[in-house]
Image 1 (cartoon, rainbow, N blue to C red):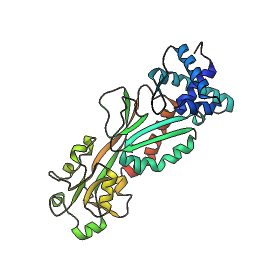
Image 2: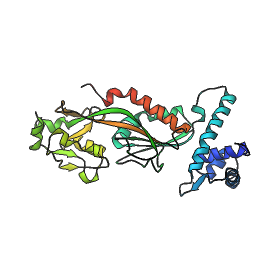
Image 3: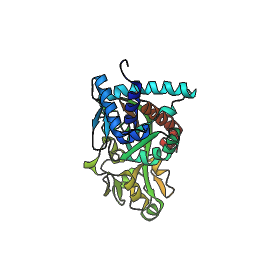
Image 4: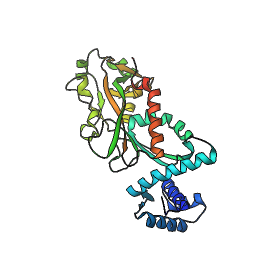
Length: 300
């Protein structure tokens, strides 16, 4: 990084980590005007724009992401010299945005996320857990846990784990409507709960035909958490991931031999997968999945 001032690189790192000139200035104990001036000087030395100005603040450009990789390595090396430590946690900071399916985010990831946050006190984590995924190709998220491997785009993807789903109903519902003994029994005399067909955000969410052809839900929602509440409230029978259904003592499995299997995929962007915060997030998610294997794939 010949010709660049290390103090300017520290300003750049602070802006990349905080996302705003004012916050970076506060962290460095200088005013935002000084931060902006030093940033422009660095951009002139690099010969490229390092940030784009948005309503939320400063967002790294591709040139900025490339520079951040190098500056983070320098910062880690400096931290190891200063602190005599080979650990990475002290240098992991900034904002890590993780996009996940709603059920996995709510019932698995969120329950363990405090452990990760405690390991990296300088890191802000955005957990985006809803019906749909942010675009990895457009770098809307740093990490995504998806239901299938993206077929195209500048991404890196690897399979995390298979997981099981099954039919569940509340014990009160089964006491009143009876427990079906075979999948064909679901065609009549039972209320089914499921997704809204034309609002499915992934084809992997089409479940009922795998239980029995012709099954149609009468109560429908785009939210797996809403479906869980409907099932728990005694409204009918529906498919849930086992990590949701088995976690609710008010629910009982229905036709327990009828299992459906899907997979989670860990996806990052080729331009950012080596960033310290992304590497830390990937490693933690993979380790957490190993600990939760029995929840994802229960033996019974």
